[in-house]
Image (cartoon, rainbow, N blue to C red; front, side):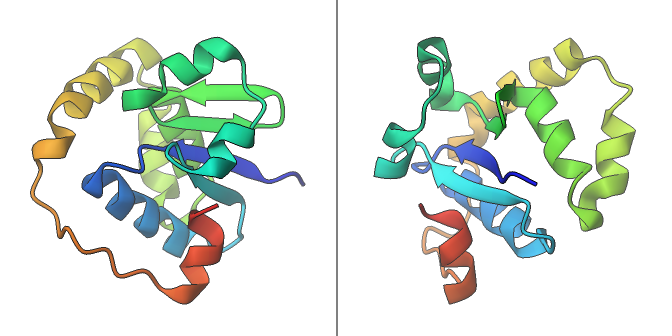
Amino acid sequence: MNKQYIIFDGDCAFCNQIVMLLAKNDTQNKFIFISNTSNKFLELEMPSNTKEILQDTLILLEGKSIFVRGKAIKNILVQIPKFKILGYLLLPIPNFIVDVFYRLFAEIRRKINVKRECIIDEALKLKIFL
């Protein structure tokens, strides 16, 4: 099975905390987490229009398929055992509705008070920061 790439906003403290939570619970090692500020991100072959929407958007690359925002969240959650139920609860909700909430949250996420210091487990470093 090919690895799936989760591309996230590396400048957002809240996003980093969520990625660490996902990585810690990705017990089957299905995902590789790549910050959109890393050199590895620049090496990825993605359609040019995808890089334009990346600033406030979570992207899941699965082979040649690209999932953004709500679709990405749904696909990620159903693959992580601890969050599988939440993922299945979101599946019947139309993507445009999930995307509306995603965009609203994306506007305020940087204002959410999270620890500015990220303490990263050594094992997670190999999965996250490529």
